[in-house]
Image (cartoon, rainbow, N blue to C red):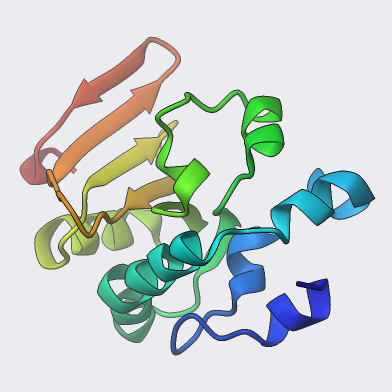
Length: 155
């Protein structure tokens, strides 16, 4: 697949496959970008599932969403120091930024089905994942000290 094909490949009402594949590091390294563009079909379906269940409904309710991290091929995941079990590796997770992060975080927690929802460093971004197999509805806060479980009422 080419970058242009990924930009035109719709995986959701408001999102293209490129939204999940672009990465500021990979965009300027042709060999790494090539690996990103070799995303398996099963992972593309995971992107569709994320759009259908989280991103498209979220966009309709809170507005424009920017995906800062989506799918990460193995090489890119290593560069970003992602765990081997990271859902970014199979396109089940995204990191997003959006105006009014606190309202968005609370909306996801209270209204959408998700696997993990993480407040990354005082809402500098939101990590949200969806799994077709098992959604744990786990809400976490990530700080320099590590991860801590929180509840919707703590947001």
